[in-house]
Image (tube, rainbow, N blue to C red; front, side):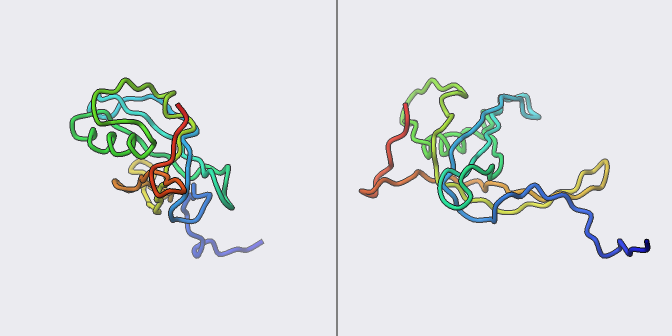
Length: 142
């Protein structure tokens, strides 16, 4: 068999839903460490409503560093946690909490292999609280 592969793009896609906003729940939290040594929580976000419910929308991370703490506060607040003062929070406290999350495509190239991949990412301000019927923030599980 003869086939011209020159027109086939060599890119791996990890995209399971179209880009855009979705209601998502935190389905998994993996603890890790960032490059600067700060604690990092990797969140697997699963679509919780609509046509794509049950699919993994993407991953996002919270980096507990001086530079990343403002975003951590924003995300935790969007997930329904009270961040107006001191807070004790563990990764398990985020499980099944819901937010309205924006996803956009991001293409990367592995510097070692040269392989390209595309996945959905959450922009800095991509989290918003789920609003209740009265327009206020909906209640979250405790």
